[in-house]
Structures are given as structure tokens and as C-alpha cells.
Length: 159
Image 1: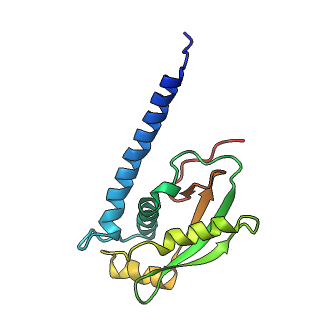
Image 2 (image 1 turned 90 degrees about the vertical axis):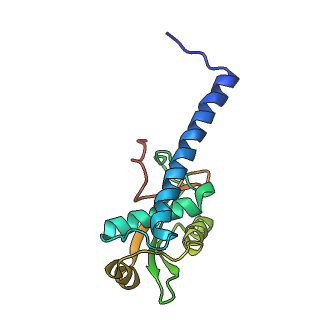
């Protein structure tokens, strides 16, 4: 059986995709709020958990710039940052890898870190790890300028 899509069914499909992303964004918002906005939140212990909570916080605070699709086979840019907490509990980003032909993507990645609130509820061990070593995260930019973080990204599509 063949299915014929009209303009209205395409809008329905697009609406379903939007609804799915909205549901994901809501989940990411709640998860990020647990660690990065709520006093007395559960204490993140492992480096992987801290990194995942950080990525969810970026998704929450940069929702308009994030995508939940499989990354394209040929990405527009990949930016890798080392992210640390400074002595004032503010996020700082150091560029590990950038694309010289796409400096605006590096600026977007850094801005997504700079706008994050101070984390709340970290264990002393996790907080010290973020001050001393930080974490390394990759921003995977689609051609349209939206990004996913490697920690939470779906598997990349084949070429």
C-alpha cells in the first residue's frame, strides 16, 4: 500500500516531530534543573554523570540552537571545548578544537557555556574535578547551525 502525503499530512508529520522534540526538551529541562538550578538537588558523583548533567543543562539553556536528530554524515563544524568551573563557580570554556572556516560556530559553543547558571548540588569531589580538570565536550553542528553535544547525541548518520 502506498501512502500519499498531502501538504496537510506533511504539516501533521512536522507537528509530530515538533511535539517529540518538545517532549525531549521538557525531559532535558527537568533533568538539568535537578543538578544545575535547584538547591538541595541530588549530588552527581561520577565524571560521566557530571558530564551528562552538564550536557542536559546546555540543551535546556540553548534549546533553540539544539537539535535531537541524528547528526549529518558531513557536519558543518565540530568544536571541542574544555569546560571548567572557576573559583566563583562560573563556567569557563577553553577551545580545544575549532573550525577556522566557521569561527561563528566556536562563538556559539562558547556562548552556550557562558550562559549557564552555576551548578548546584555537586558533591565536593565532583566540584573539585570540574575546577581541576574540567570536562571535554564536543559540539556537533548541523548545516543549519543547530548543534548536539557528543555526550547526548544520537549516532551519526551514514554517508
